[in-house]
Length: 175
Image (cartoon, rainbow, N blue to C red; front, side):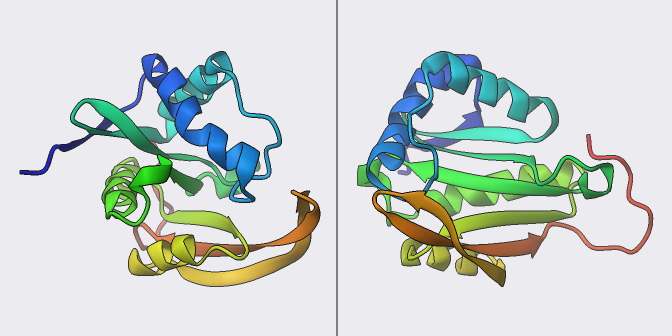
């Protein structure tokens, strides 16, 4: 029996989300943040994402082991149907199917809210993330070269995108 459960995040999840995220900040180039956010900052991020997009957490036997969220792609109003998405898993949960389950739930939620396109940026090299995005139907749209300096070197960021819904009609406002 699968002991995993996906649910909406709340500010009460901020400390656990910050703990999942901190190793990525401190020891990898998966994010360009240099200092892990505090619990209070993470709570603010969760609240902001829940307001217009989504932030989901994955629990296994009641323990938070990952999260995925959507947020604005760009601030200009014409971009409001496009969102940027990210997923982070506890270090011992990578490559176990958890990212696929969590991301699928997030993309479904964003589509139900009226978003048309999801975009994600991946610092290179990052084949596990690239494989996850390909498996979920994302296609590569371009690479920004040497745009982030972290851990003693320059890093490229490859962008991918995926349709959440299609149509040329003027879409309804995302909810």
